[in-house]
Image 1 (cartoon, one colour):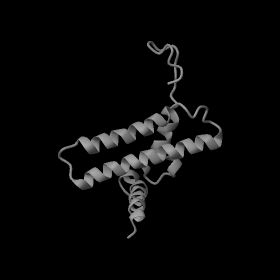
Image 2 (cartoon, one colour):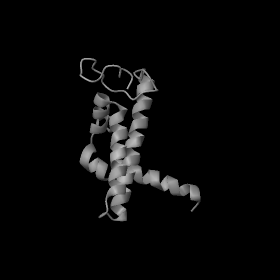
Image 3 (spheres, one colour):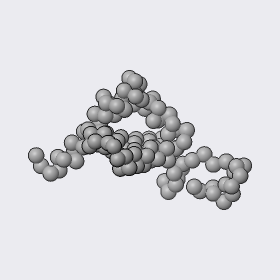
Image 4 (cartoon, helix red, strand yellow):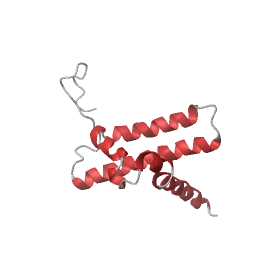
Length: 122
């Protein structure tokens, strides 16, 4: 096996998890990829949700002391999946012309909320 194949096997494992593994079992339930919960929540809360989920998965994987390697790897593959979802989501926004500012994470800003003055560009 070539060294470059090692990374390809990791991404293949991500696809396996998303399409047939834990992700498909828990979240997909046979729904079209873009009709699954990850997309609906990203539409409501922006890519920050997806990147936050990736960070959560990495934190869980690296901070748990009672996990074995297989569980660590599943969480890390899940983190890669959420990063991939963020990339897919952003590409779709750019294609559809709904991405208004590539420099910021899209969130719903409400100027009426206390403590948000001056934070229009979060």
